[in-house]
Length: 152
Image (cartoon, rainbow, N blue to C red; front, side, top):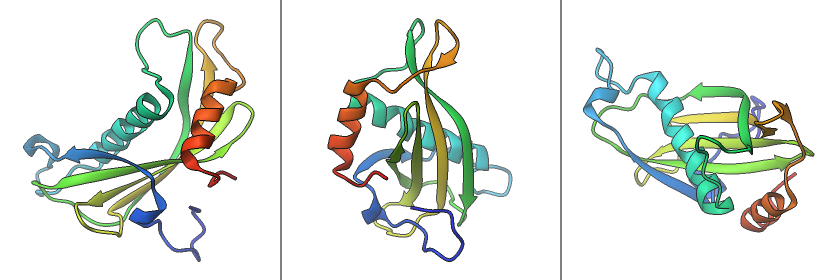
């Protein structure tokens, strides 16, 4: 999935990992649609769920290493109103030495076109020494095995 304007937006079939996220009444703004900041929280839930289920990694206080989100680009494609059952698709699309690309899209239930997309850069991080470090081989293998060769 690329952010080039001449390429198509991701589809539901581009993702192997999904996190269900129901909207809540309080997620809507005064105009009645889901507030933009909530989309960021929804994809955060998808990102944390991905690492918990694919890599058995729970980010919690006292963790000596894990990932941080270094950068994110988002595209708001369509309005979403409450109530909706949303699905957050999450995929790691590139693994570097210490960094990785993570894409996410939010889909309405039963729809193939996203209402929201994002492209982020994550960094594996040593929280004790406050610096990036190489992605551990175990984590790398778990991601590669899950993504089944779709990494660049």
